[in-house]
Image (cartoon, rainbow, N blue to C red; front, top):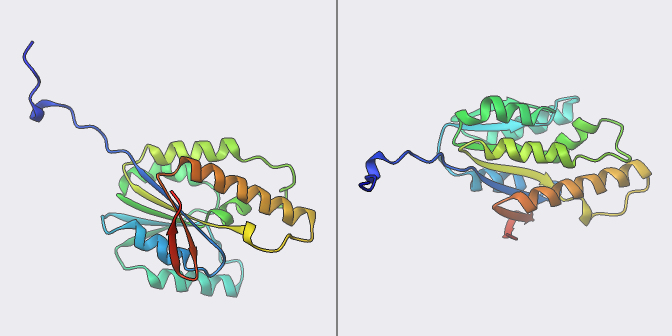
Length: 185
C-alpha cells in the first residue's frame, strides 16, 4: 500500500489550551488573563459575575472597558459546561472570569459538605472539546486570614479544591500578585 501523502491525511482537530490564572482580589489577574489569551479571534469573554448591586455593576463595566470591541461577552453565572458545549467551538480564544464567583453561584448558600469534583471534571472535558485557547481566572483565597464562620471556611476550602483540580488539568498555571505574573506550571 502506498504511503498517504501529507495533503490527503485527515486534519487533526486542534486540542484546546487550558490556562489557569490565580490571584487575590485586585491582584491584576483579569488583565493578566487577557494578556495570556492572545489575539486570535473570534474571542469570547465569559463573565460569571452578576450585577446584583451598584458596586458590582460598576466593577463589571470597568472590566468590560478593558477589553476591545473584538470580544464577544457572554454572561454565564452557572452553566459554564453547557455554554462550552453549545458555544465554545465558535471561538479560538475564551476567557472565563471568574471561577470563584461561579463556585459561589453554583453552590448558593449550601457550601458546607459540597463536592464539585464531578462538576469540574465535566467542565474540563467540555473545555477540552473546543479548539480554543481557554484562560480561566480564579481567586486564590488561601493567602488570607482564616475566616471566622464555618460557611466561609467551607467556601474557602471548596474554592481551593476546585483551583487544585483545575491546576492539575491545566497546561499552564500562573499566580498574579501586585500585577506581576509568575508561572507555576
